[in-house]
Image 1: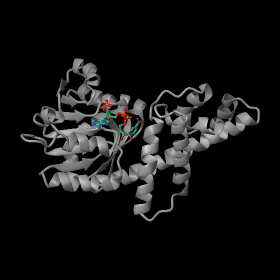
Image 2: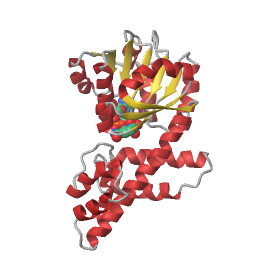
Image 3: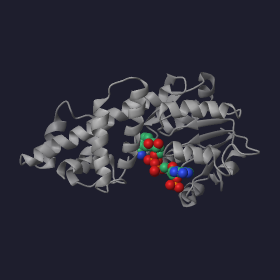
Length: 288
Ligand code: NAP
């Protein structure tokens, strides 16, 4: 593909996703608030912009993988923001996890500036971002999504079109609610097993040998056995998403009592100083 594309946000996920785009022979210009994170990718052949606006002046199509609404607002509307004077940006693909209502409002604000918003939140953590095996949920204009599908296909193994803007992020809320509930449940169960005199390895090997041996639990088992939680998806981001899930449930008039209970657990995990550890570290709340 010959068009220069922009990618903003080179954190745990974005750095790996941008690497996939670069590896697929795309001409990519990068921006990250902390400039050091772009250096490795620049060596792989990307160019680096000093501000979002500098990037917007080079790229019509811009992908974003940022923490959430505050970061996105800063990048788009802040000083030297993406949509400033002389920008070429016409399409923004927001891959960050945000509340559906935020993306709907952002779509309206951008459209008033002649820019189309597409949403493409992802299912899968750093390992899936690294090998391009994420499932990507898409929302927005179908024709525009078709145009960006080859780029999304370089980052994920499966694209699921959910409908208009807001619906892909709604689906993402569904997935992350289940992630939070499942991992808290595993942490509580393993801790109960330990209190009953088993090692965490004995509990996990037994539980995962049966019908509960799903890929997600398998992926987290080693952390729970070792009691070490290097961040794939950090506690602070799970808590962020549980807040979004709460407002989404309220907006949809859905009862989500487990979302509230799990949110309390993650608040406690934050208070234990676990913000930057993987969200499997919620087990420490049960041990405490
Ligand atoms: P991360 O490592 O914390 O990276 C966050 C990115 O946002 C960084 O590039 C950071 O820049 C940037 N940022 C934050 N605040 C900013 C601001 N005010 N202005 C400009 N840039 C700002 O997060 P991540 O794990 O890559 O996650 C990114 C998104 O993907 C989140 O919405 C998350 O919920 C979602 N997600 C994560 C996972 C996962 O497993 N990690 C999986 C699926 C979805 P700096 O480098 O300067 O801090």
